[in-house]
Length: 294
Image 1 (spheres, rainbow, N blue to C red):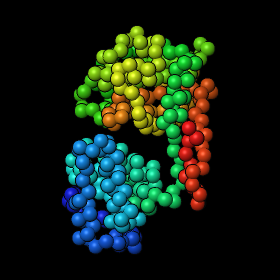
Image 2 (cartoon, rainbow, N blue to C red; image 1 turned 90 degrees about the horizontal axis):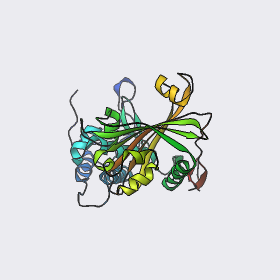
Image 3 (cartoon, rainbow, N blue to C red; image 1 turned 180 degrees about the vertical axis):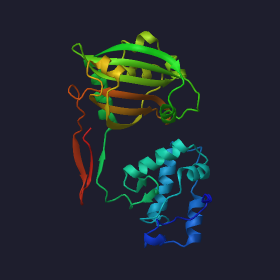
Image 4 (cartoon, rainbow, N blue to C red; image 1 turned 180 degrees about the horizontal axis):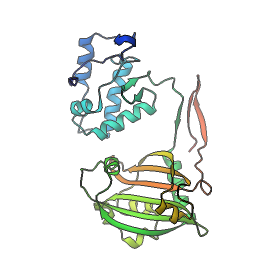
């Protein structure tokens, strides 16, 4: 199947028997094509590129160029059109999904689901996250297990937006509370940032403090939470049985310019750690919008 051209108009997902969905663009094909072609980012704008792309696509959705049920261009096509990396496009699409404009479906692409006004949403506060991380650093102890320069796994390189083969500093630490280990932390930091603190600092100073000393202050964080089974190495470090369930948090920190400055994979014993969010209703309507009270 040939790839759609850069300026292709929006398309609707197919229905049964290959028939087009009843959803149709409210604009003519020509106007839709023109609207997409006109959507460009401004390299001179202080806003990060992924936020500019998200704003352009959101405007196209709200204008009717991409109505509910239509399919947005793929990541590769968008990256080519906006002249950015696919990871930048992915971040923009994730933001649109969180805001309720689209749904990302494997094998079908990114489907427009609405204008973002009626979707029940849970959102976390960056300030609350930072407060929790600082408190954890002050109230617990950490042991440095290993630190080295290495080429990171592909997933981490993508999170840090690094070219393949670019080396980072990887630090493995175990955090304890009153002598009992409860978390296994694997942190990856670009070498130019890691060069501004010592290995000894990793065993004595909270990572957020080290980043700030290195003039890489975190301004944005994106994280996912899932459950995993403990590998033998991690089970030994946390004093649990191999295969025991763990709570895994994967997070990337970015500075005010949008640069990824740290990626971390943290695994926690669920019997000694809980993740809690206090939410406040911010809007009415079915489901409403809920956000972190912090």
